Image (cartoon, rainbow, N blue to C red; front, side):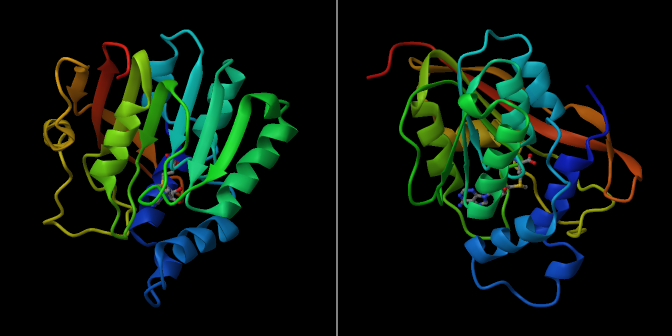
Length: 233
Ligand SMILES: C[S@@+](CC[C@H](N)C(=O)[O-])C[C@H]1O[C@@H](n2cnc3c(N)ncnc32)[C@H](O)[C@@H]1O
């Protein structure tokens, strides 16, 4: 834990709009993220530490990576034996993830699908659904997506949501009034019935992170881990 993973943090600042995104508003979310993954090939290729920590304690099964980006989590999960469905709004991103899975010999355990998750959600039921820094500068039906994620869990399956809890010094958005939803707020928004889901973890750990230029800082993650407790309806 606490390893410096420039991948996640790099994507983070991009999500809020990085330097070369400042010169004009993108036309829509798809174009924005397409441009992001067409021009930045090195970020997001390492596993996010909280996902690794959580999944390391599990027996590999089926996993869904929401907003997979460059696929660091998807590839790592596949390398641990998980069968992973990787989803992103960017067709470029999912194509790159599939190619990387092929290069690394795990293509048989990786399925990629392009979805605007505000509009469509992958079929299937999963032992693990992961939403790592599922942030975007565009309107998105995030609560609806995360509720669909909770419904997609198999009995006993886990939904891991990791959001930013602080602004890294290298983040483009240095708005001092920015509000990051706490895990408790996210749980309240999801409003998951306690007979079907239980919250296993809701906290805000700190870790050392490394920015795109190699600078380091302590950042906070907002972590919510939910388990589906009974058979699906
Ligand atoms: C901040 S990045 C995080 C990427 C990756 N999970 C990571 O930790 O490196 C957010 C991701 O969500 C994706 N995304 C944004 N809006 C989306 C939507 N409406 N549907 C599907 N994916 C979306 C973006 O393309 C991007 O890959």
